[in-house]
Image (cartoon, rainbow, N blue to C red; front, side):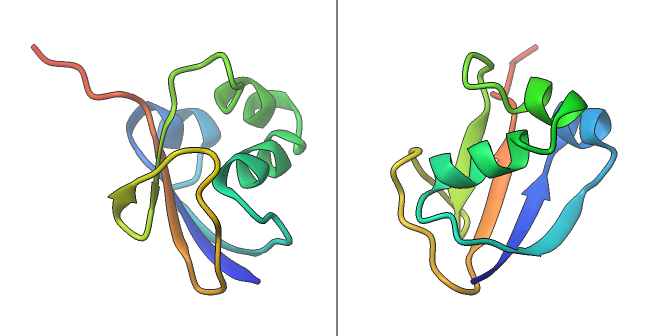
Length: 83
């Protein structure tokens, strides 16, 4: 399936990409995160499960077990901090 993936804030800076469209067989958000981690290097570090990365599916907050679908829009971003 074809998925649009967006990266925000510090993740965008760390990964050096704001958005990409990719083909994936990942069934869930968590599986997609692992697929992206499989790129190695900075990808593995930035999307490590121990890091507080929030995920959204079709512009709604979602958990790792959320099912993906063709044409989905996924967003990864760090938690919002106040100041």
